Amino acid sequence: MLKKEQFVYYGKFLKPHGTKGEIALESDGFTLGDECNFVACDIDGILVPFFFENVRPKNHDTIIVKMERMESAEAVRYLTNRDAYIPRQWVEESEELTWSYFIGFKAIDITHGEMGEIVDIDESTINTLFVVEGKKDEILIPAIEDFIEGIDHENKEIVFNLPEGLVSL
Image 1 (cartoon, one colour):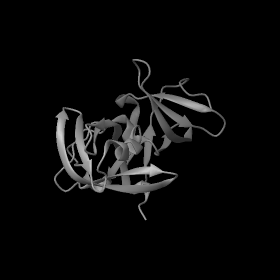
Image 2: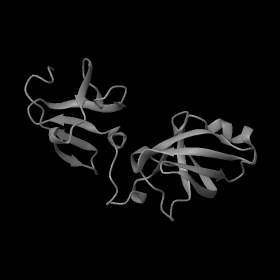
Image 3: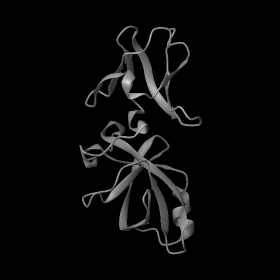
Image 4: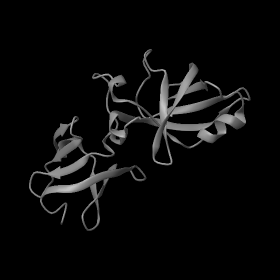
């Protein structure tokens, strides 16, 4: 069984491309290496792998993929608007991480302690925000590198040093 903590958000399936079972897959900043032969989608709470038959670039942030055993636009339409995940080990150390990578991380402030889990990234305004599900309320933390004190990738924790008054718990 695939475990979600072993995966990182890759991007989102867009719409079918043509009629032969190809679909566009938009990346959230990662490039797929040669070893990457599948992505996983969360379907009813379970990560399900979808294996590539063929992969080709469309533009700088979108690829066109042909999935095994999916031979028509109708078959791949099932994946439209679904999130795609890749195994964490396929993310190269040198690649720049996107803010979405931190979904599922525990948010800890050096002053306030554990604040909750990062459940979403709000990019609807010019200022990107971590959406943290706190003990009582939702907490919005600006996604600013200067506020990040440290990152523990293995334990999925991000430690913040937030200015006083930014978070009232």
